[in-house]
Image (cartoon, rainbow, N blue to C red; front, side, top):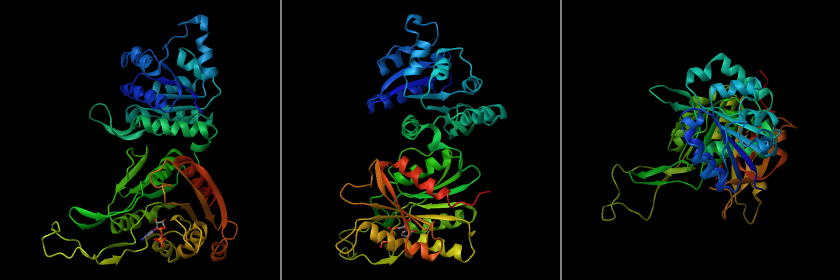
Length: 423
Ligand code: CTP
């Protein structure tokens, strides 16, 4: 259903990215009104926002007074997104100021409000800004974690505005999921490791074996965990995901063996391991040092393979043997097509027992389902009501309805959070 989206733009150098955000919502068929602050207009002109949104742009409560704009736009909005939200704007919103059209629109609105801060690292980390962020979150406003990276000038650190498509997707997830509930601060102080993407197993320097995993579900998990306040490490094999989840540290790997090494390094410090990567079960026994030529002496009709380690099962074993803490929660994934003997769910139940993890997210795949798609669905198998091996033989099956991968990620993390030991 099309939403009435109000985009607020603060006065920072990242204001130019708000133009892309307007386009993101327009292309998804939403109605957009833009309210820049006076200082935002020093970076991007009103004409740009008017042309992109197809609606007039005003800044001041005294513009178009006959239309009572200072209450109408905020009251009518289904979603307010402010990008970039400057330190000054966060402070004004936290103290309930109404000294321009944007802040007064926020005060009269009852819809979800999403703020995407962008500023220099020192300003973001300043105690005053952090206190304002806490206040705003306590009031149910979503404050997106800024991205890490190069800022204006020579400095680098947290404070970058995430990419507009990323802000758009996170904001729509908030609109779908009861205001700030999806990004509640439930993982503060927790260390979460997520694996994502499909491993690549080289044959020679130009050829490799891989699979259809897009990495989107794993990236969505890292996204939500980071927004819930966790310290996130994303171990990423090959993906077609363009943005890096805001606030997550990314470790890039290629092969199953590299993924295993990264998992082994991260696991001893993790509270939650989410193993969403599609790991190749086999790799070529040897990798040719130079390109295998058709007219060379290679036999192309056979490729000798050797088995890769089962990283998930190895993790469960390491926990059993005390190499990683016994409280570490381990989540596995199962992409199943089903066959003439068993349904996808029956296969998943056997996998749950075999792998020994605490939760298993199972999806039915194949024929355009799941891989590379925006939506996902399936079942979560949990031993929560009957802990230990017994619970795995007859797991609780939780239905995960079809929805965008961010919503599915939130559902998986909701369930995983019930298994985490409180601090
Ligand atoms: N996995 C793993 N190491 C492997 C293979 C899979 O850690 N060598 C993990 C995946 O990350 C996923 C889970 O195990 O969390 C299930 O992956 P899947 O490929 O469905 O399981 P397999 O054990 O390979 O079973 P099968 O191919 O027989 O379905």
